[in-house]
Length: 103
Image 1 (tube, rainbow, N blue to C red):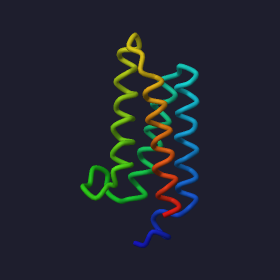
Image 2: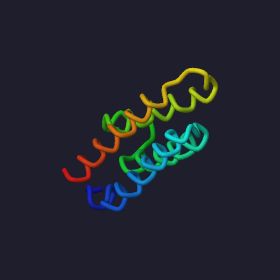
Image 3: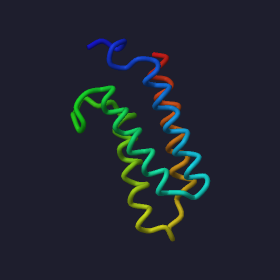
Image 4: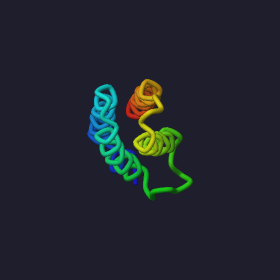
């Protein structure tokens, strides 16, 4: 498949909306909502590239999967702050995916 058929511009816009929503949820201290949204974003991103867990996933998608796992783990340990760090990670991902969409 070509970039146009698998990773269309509207896919990147949808992904960016999900990442923005997760960032807002984290900013509100709602790790559960952020976790749910990041799971949706992870599915969206991996479907844009093919098989989940495949070696061909780009670094930005692997970083998204890692951040999603980090947020999920933070739910079990809410006493450990890290929300600002996770938000920085989300903003970095939005930048990376934006660059992919333009490139």
